[in-house]
Image (tube, rainbow, N blue to C red; front, side):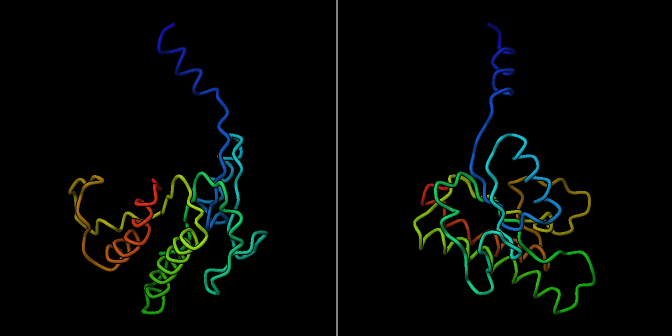
Length: 165
């Protein structure tokens, strides 16, 4: 049997994972949810509209949804489109940092760690560098979004020592 057979076997295999998406009702979350469900994965959406209790402002979550969770995807945060007033910038920053901190604190408090944590950071991490080619190993840029991204990505880095990818 050639390698083509192996590739086709992998493509056809149904993957069933438990995936929790914070902010799953937004543009990206809606599409990810649809994609994962068509694969046969269980998707749980954390949203203020329910059905799972989730409110990072009041530090409330139904933590049992994290039990035996394979992946947590964090997409929460104020949209960056629009005029960046002082209030808007603070909301962009705080919604990302507070939510990520709350998720990570919940993992630690409950001892329920996903196998994988994905935080949707932003291209703004690199700042405006003109035509310079960026890679995953490129240093952060300067400016508001770059600073927010650096702060934001530091929070879940502590999960690595708990075995979370």
